Image (cartoon, rainbow, N blue to C red; front, top):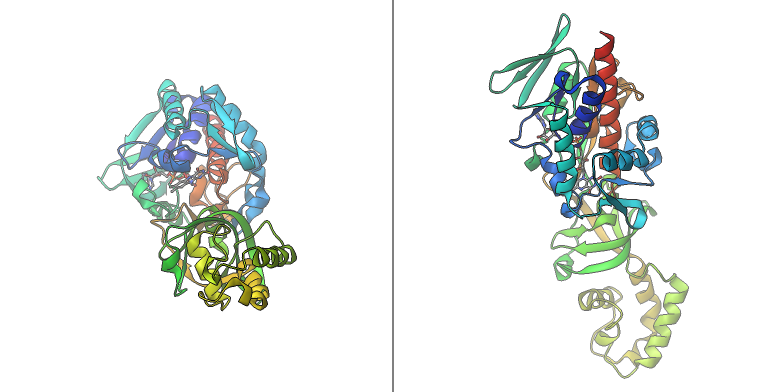
Length: 403
Ligand SMILES: Cc1cc2nc3c(=O)[nH]c(=O)nc-3n(C[C@H](O)[C@H](O)[C@H](O)COP(=O)(O)OP(=O)(O)OC[C@H]3O[C@@H](n4cnc5c(N)ncnc54)[C@H](O)[C@@H]3O)c2cc1C
């Protein structure tokens, strides 16, 4: 059995298959000099390895329900148990995010590597460029002209996001060579760009805010949390999470006071104006918002900086509106280099959701990000990689044992 791609989904597939069919029957082909390079970069080096709330309704894709059976058969609890068995101690943090207790992504990779070594699974370092089927075996052609054969194959090459770690979309070619179809791919969980003229004045500012996208008067995808402004747009988990729904022609809408409703905010501003009446208008928001944010809010509420606060009472309604709903034109997202995951991918309707086996070619399996499924930030994407990889590994072992 050949596993093409030694990332999260390929490594767990190898362990599952090795335990079920014997490690000597499993080989991983990985183009990098080391397996699991992307894993080391996950969760800012801490690896947010799963989320206890992971369920199919959190995921996006052509058929988000495709992941439901895998997430049931190998849930976040199974992931935790699986890694505990390999020696990894984990801790659950806010919003159900699970991390290694030692806060090191290296520990996740190390326990997988130890298990792969214990099972005697061979790792071949090669870049696979072609996949074909000849009579009763798959032929795997590598760029160094090596040819490898296998009775079954798992394609776990990832998508196109973060190609610096090896995932450059080559897996799409391998699966389309076997007759599969590719849905349009796009960078997802990625920073938003804006053509807003004053964005540079916010560069480097971090706020706790709400963010959504407004199109045709409707706000979609609203989320709250830590946002970071850059000189081109907005970053931070809520911004990344809505990036997949962002379309040209929409506005990025920011609520700079998400914990106060509009009426309460207006009352607060009125009271503040009475207390701070002797200050100049430009100082009115000092101590309430980051200085750069305050300056921008006053500017877009049409409040001149010099007159005293006592002269600006009639502007407070407008100011409350600008604080609750600050609009910046959306002008695109950054590219695959910056994206955490790939949206789109190989059509899931061509795979069996209970086994991850192709319905086009028996003995061919796929797992992880190469398929048209992704989830939000917070451990959801690794959970998909573990669940689909585990299922593909077990199913490929059963397929082999039945031959
Ligand atoms: C910076 C960053 C941080 C992230 N943090 C998190 C997080 O904390 N939690 C979370 O849930 N998700 C996170 N993700 C997303 C998560 O890492 C991915 O969704 C997950 O790694 C996908 O696993 P995969 O096995 O499908 O693909 P990958 O992990 O991309 O692995 C694919 C492997 O296949 C190899 N390969 C590709 N093509 C070939 C070929 N032709 N021949 C041989 N080998 C090949 C690649 O070199 C690579 O090693 C993060 C992503 C990034 C970029």
